[in-house]
Image (cartoon, each protein chain N blue to C red):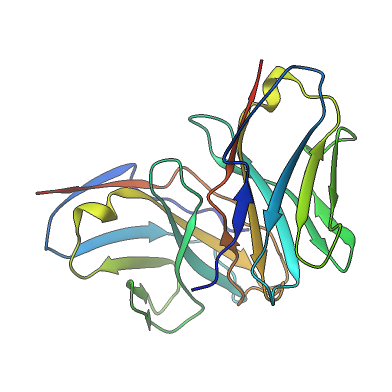
Length: 115
Length: 110
């Protein structure tokens, strides 16, 4: 069964450094998402992306964050200058469509640890 | 999105059916009911979804009441690997994000 893959599984970065988290969505999916989960807390929506544009973002997704689809298969989340509070699991998801009848499929996440 | 209410935890004996309830009394006519689960710290795993009718797939069954104000996820023969947090989410037809609540921690015991 096709799946969303994320790399790396664990990323350790010094505060203030830039980090790029990578995702390969399911190949025929058109909509892409990032969510995050701080340890012990709920899964939170960050951003959705379609047709090379951000379609929706949450208040968490500030100017420090950016997303990109650099080629036909990868989808990346960049954090420009990391803060301690960015430490979390980051999940990528993809879906075939954006309507309510289309499930999102999630990867197993990247654990980001900011020192 | 409509708010959902789930019990914080439930126990189930291995091999028995696990019935996980969810209340969504403010659901509107075009909101879907979705179920996901999260095993340990892995990514949320899609289980099943429905609008009005009951649904069944290889993983589970979803029973939605006629008034759509509540639903039940049924795992017919729970195994130890089904121990996870189960999230019931209602999603507006044209919204492309999910709001995850606190879910139900299902403990399957031998």
